[in-house]
Image (cartoon, rainbow, N blue to C red; front, side, top):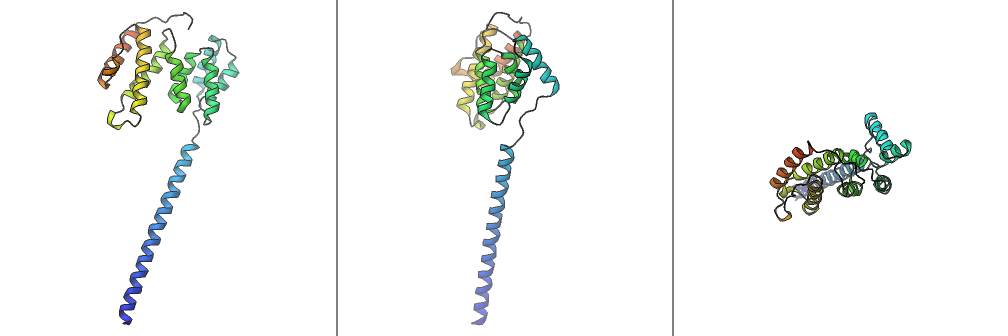
Length: 206
């Protein structure tokens, strides 16, 4: 009886150890994921290099905006606070400072990025800077495999609106919405780049 009791005690002890070990692993994973999530939330915003800031200052003169105010708002576009970012986006959208938004686009995120794209596709006349920003965005989104795209509906709408804007500027037919395959968008992008290379910018008011 003593031997049986000892075996049962040892089994219970091993079970308890296994439970504690699994619990410790679970807690460790939870803490690790929390730290990773916190790091993502606290990731520093894009800090424009000096050359980019100088380009913004030059564009501020083009749009007749104060350089200091323009640079401050440009940097705020990348703020982790999206409310501030949206206010900064409005600062550039109201005077139709499209080239400045196009310069910022690769580093924008969330609703600020979406609003900037909506502003850029609303531009009435062709601009090489805006075209390059949008066609790069188009190529990037189009490169996502359909079966692996968690935002397929949103990205299909995005590709459609970018294609229509580019088609309008370059006076070429956009891909048909019902046939908006990856291959058709790739072919359209290639054609657009070829035509844009010889396109002269319009100085008409937007």
